[in-house]
Image (cartoon, rainbow, N blue to C red; front, top):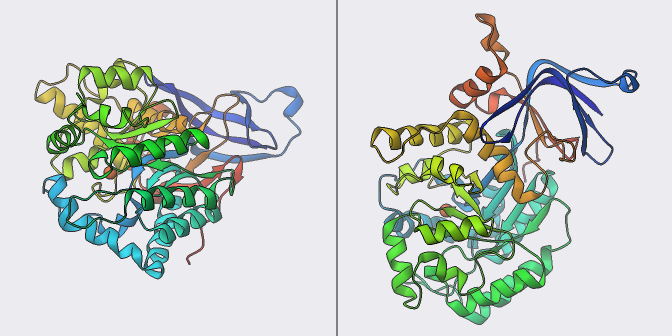
Length: 423
Ligand code: FE
């Protein structure tokens, strides 16, 4: 397959790579074999899918969100995160006990991912096994990539404990057994949502499952100071919040994603960098729940791997253009309040939302040879009716002005993905 259009992607966070009216050659396995300004002689008689003046960009990765909270986006913000969780989030997540309700919510969520060009996602479901399996099945049918996490917990902050340690370990094992090997694109991820609501025994067992089945792991880290203090109080032998995961074997070794990371010690930051842990920057959520502003520019400058997370429903939008814009604008606030010496540039947010987060899925999120062709065709041609803009300007403008209506096509591994059915 040969695709033609205005190509925009990022090889690193320092700037866009653009190819006006360029060509991407994709093999039968959906892997990019070449990117060209002019088509090589030997390929000139092959059929071309020509998208004219449209932009071709890598598909988005949403590194962190809670699918069960999809109906609650925009509700009850400006409350401290732990209070918000107890009063609004836990009651919503409890509704996933009802499998019919779970199917309805998750079906709508999967369609919303497709609409918003979120071709890759790292999800935290809930502690309800049937609902987690429904979500996995819907993702499998969608043709989109994801890591689906069944949430394990054996402690509580709300007065209700869901399962004993043994039960939680058994449910985690059952989720793996029922999902592993079911799909090339959708896989389970070991999920200790928060070390505060897990015993070390449970997290140690999950770390062992991750190694046994060669699976990734995820958790929340350093979202707000109340949470940090609770974690350290809960585990008196830990110097840092990260230690609460690390002492259980859930902080690196296997591919690991940690969400938020607003408040990290220098020791934690060093460990995250050395272990190549993916940080999910969730700027929308960090505003809505009064959590803080992650030092995004500093992390990039220090070589930390960062992606973007919508964190719905702490976050209020699955529009990844909007989430990238929030990351840029929060970088500006850090400059204004003198806590950063440089702003975050639009290309840096673009990089995090594509190649940064995409790295958790292998070679996705860029248009370099060897990468899977996971891409979006974006129609922004309305901007050209008054002025001529460079592709760099058009990329910047997307962050501030685009939404799902601009996304015209979605490809995963070279295959165009139709809108998922409603169930
Ligand atoms: Fe979260």
